[in-house]
Length: 111
Length: 113
Image 1 (cartoon, helix red, strand yellow):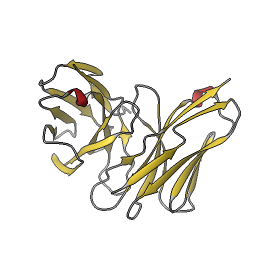
Image 2 (tube, chains in turn purple, brown; image 1 turned 180 degrees about the vertical axis):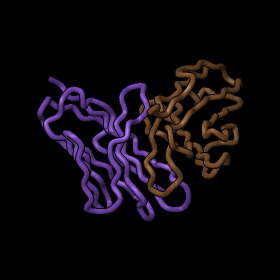
Image 3 (cartoon, one colour; image 1 turned 90 degrees about the horizontal axis):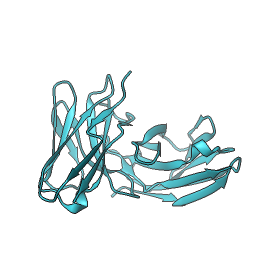
């Protein structure tokens, strides 16, 4: 069964203090790994898709990387508006494009 | 370009009742997936519809059923509501194809009393 584990569960940073969020996965053949951002009471907002080990993608202060066992979401010089829950999900072969999510990392960036 | 829309935004029901949630996909998308997200958890896949048929189903009981209409919009029906069905119900749309990104709507918050 596909499994996704995210760490840490919660992270508190000062504005400008860079850090990384981890997503470890177990899947029989990865079709894609997805990062979403979710604000309280809202639906997840798409950030990145990674398909193969070694791939990297960037968007503003965020950079996502992928290895054969895990993905990292690096946040450089975060701002308070980056505060949200970051969700990681995997898509595996075997029918359909169902996403299996982790429980997320709740990030709070303080002034 | 309208994104994924869902209605209603909030709903309160009592145990044993039935509920219908609605979703309109993003323009150009033909596939709709439904997820349940309990508080503090990641979304859990319920099922996916394409060409008006259920194509894939997660580990949810038959009390959860759905429908897709010719205009690609979709409904999620839950019968015999339980307290544990209280959650945020998310609809995601995509185009039919491998590795296609799913875009989520704002969700419907269901509270079962």
